[in-house]
Every structure is written in C-alpha cells, then in structure tokens.
Image (cartoon, rainbow, N blue to C red; front, side, top):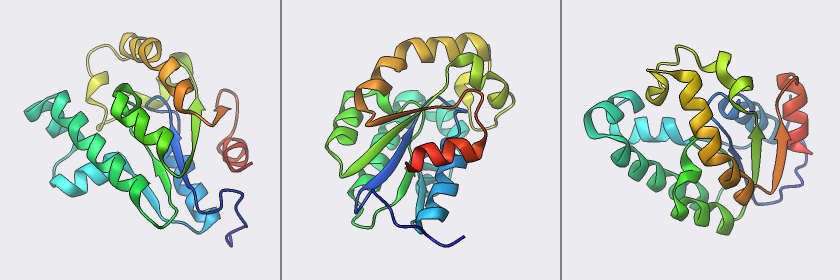
Length: 174
C-alpha cells in the first residue's frame, strides 16, 4: 500500500495505552501507511542495552527500566524525521515523560481499552514482567493509576473495544 497524505504534517504520531492495547500492531501498520519509520520504545530499550525488558526488570528493577524508558522516549520524539512511536504502556507514569509528550512536536493518540479488553491479549507475554503473578489484578491497578494520565496527554482517544485492527487504524489516522 502506498503512503497517503498525512494530516500530521511533520509531527510524530505517538501511541499510548495499556499493555496489550495494540500500540505495536497499530503503530507498524500506521507507519507503513504513512511511509514513516516505526519506533517502539521497548524495542529501542532492548536494542540499546542488548537485553530484554524482562531481564532489565529482573536484574536492575523497575526504576532502572523507567530511566531507560524516559531516555528512549525523549530520543524518539526529538528525532527530526516524523515517525510513528509506540510508547511503553507505563511511559505516562513519570511526570517528566508526560511533559515530553505534551511538549513534543507530536500527535498523541491513546488506544483506550481497559483491563477487561486487554486481559486476553496479554496472557503469556514474555516481555510483560509486571503481569507475571496476577495479570488481572495488575491490569486493574495499572488502569486505576494510569487512566487519568493517558487522558492528560492524549490529543485523541481511540476506543479499541469491539473494533478490528483495521477499524482502530482508520480511527487513529483520522
């Protein structure tokens, strides 16, 4: 499929949302459609460190991971070339990251789906160490802590419940 003109202009398209909301899937498709590079902050962390998200969490802890997450998010939105960026689900937890997202030359789209919507999608995810012990309870906790933060930085909200990948992609690109 050839790239189509974008109403984004020279802005990045940044996707935020809970783990399992489709940021990577929709991001890849949007990047292809727009003819832009796709950046996934989790993949950037793994590339930068040569380690998996899981091993960083296990060996260095969540704070170290969040530090790396902040660094790669800042680098991604600082790029001169407009890209589609899938931000890690917890990127909004830090105020500094929310400031980065609000001040970036970017359109931030929240792929909004609560715990019941993403629960089946995340089971057994090797790169989701926070969901190891009790996924449903942790997803509920994440939702409670992050919903208002996603809303705070989002320029647009796209509901994912009951929608196909194609429908979500079209809503994101509107």
